[in-house]
Length: 276
Image 1 (cartoon, helix red, strand yellow):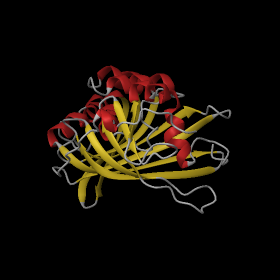
Image 2 (tube, one colour):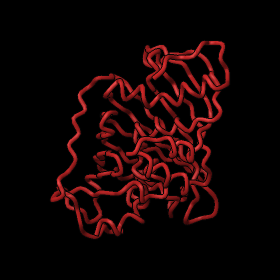
Image 3 (spheres, helix red, strand yellow):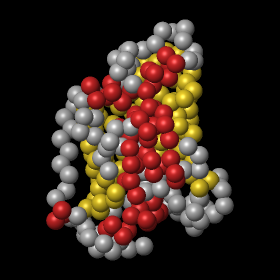
């Protein structure tokens, strides 16, 4: 049954992309004043980012996930929409070429929801018209890495765990003035303060990653909305000694865009064995 496959979910999503350090050799508040460099005010600004996104409602999203180990780097990219009030989203995830560079994977359609990740075009024994469902609270990374794209709302909620923050300065993203913050978030604190829908996944990540400290760069507009965030995760490589470094970047834009996400009916969810 699908529930019995969840322990292999990281392999399901990432091994298909050649990422699992495998045989390839890869192993709401307003902005703070400009003179604020560190301190509680800056930390609070980041912790309120998820609330600002809820008030914004919806947005388009672009994602990028880079994994590097053993001198090899691969990148997965995604594009889609997200509803921050419902905490649901739809992404089309483009997997990288095979290590030899001779074949390209089909895009994977992913639906994101509180506590669940749905994947279509997963392949390897899954019928083309079926979805694979994974319970994110049962993943050792809480689906911050598994699906090849970090859930945009989970990424914002991770900032609730901000501990040390430095205000870097003003800049622009696609012509939008933003303020750049750099700091470190703690997964334990983020999980404690997260919404009910994201809490189990963040708790799992706090236990599963090599460290609970997550460095980040975040860019907020004048309404406190997260426009760009880059997290750097580190998890233990289960097949070789050492850790794997993962950088996950999310861009949010065109707030208010339609984001009607329909989750699959139970009859459309694959219940068989996923081929290795």
